[in-house]
Length: 84
Image (cartoon, rainbow, N blue to C red; front, side, top):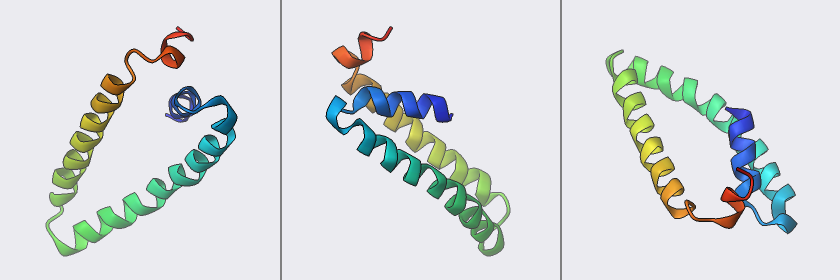
């Protein structure tokens, strides 16, 4: 996942701000690794154990919709097509 996210951040960023985009990515990426297990443990303790799967699938659906929107907005971008 990291090479894909790094390549996407590099392609979407302006050339003069690429370092800033990559530094924000490197700060935000581990945040999910810390919050995800804590949130899943909270769901497991407070609600039923099956709630982890329900909320996990909900988050995956939201991420899929976000990636579809991101793809449609940047489908014809010169920066995305010049590397292919």
